[in-house]
Length: 383
Image 1 (cartoon, rainbow, N blue to C red):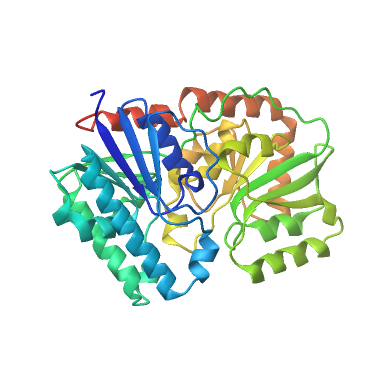
Image 2: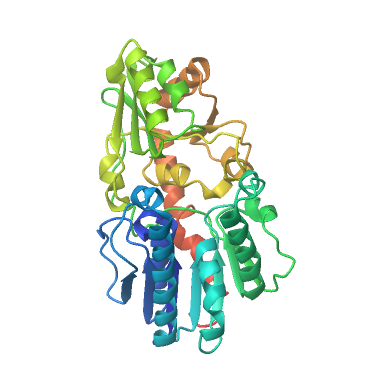
């Protein structure tokens, strides 16, 4: 339907959520109009297709600024978003509503009696609401979990980035259809990449949230190191919301024999990730086992598949024994210890160009967002 409309609702910024960004640029090929309601947590940089209409709610404010603001500021931000949501849905009368995560579900619950017609509701959950957070009795967490159960009773389509996460959702009232949309990168974003070679140091690259449970300390403590005669470097790119942890990390870097073997850079926008990692050789996609999210990471790992898209062999936590990882010739289980890391880096360095080419080819042929998204699109009534 060339004139059909979809309203996508995300209570964050789409450039901070690559799976949402990938979905929107692909939805733009199927819908006449794609409208995106979001929180402006950063400056807009992405160049969207001409039929994608942006609707930022409220003033630009980083996530850290929002979280450190007063209760009144946060409540006013919530209220503004609910108002903007209702105004948009009444004006646009979209055939489909795509709600990302529990906050939009909570807000839809508040306005549902004022929504004209009966749009098809699609609910996608990026992140699991942690059981340990629910057990604290926090009222906001309880409201979000309740809203999630409500929206699953309304949804005609429910999607997750990994099937391993399905047991964490109450599907007792769900009558719609389910699909898994892995967090594979898009061919529209990761394109025109040349072959990777090692001509000097071999760089192990991490990008994402700098926090505990990512094995960073273990890698740092293992350095300096060589792999097939190449010095190993560790590049960390991302953001850290825990100043105390970040200081401990910097102290651990200063304590190793060659502090220059580790670099830390600020997070880069999704559109500049390829450029930022142009000198990388191996991806670090380690997740611990201390949370529901990490234990069910599976095909939800952005880090794992973005490295693959760039032609980087990948190291991952061997305790997270997902069959989806075991079958990849370019992916290797590891522990954040010197012995384990040295063994795998040595093997990768010795077979680098072959492994890199296999990763890139598998992304192009199989592990890309477009192939994964195609089957889901067939479940929508108006695309």
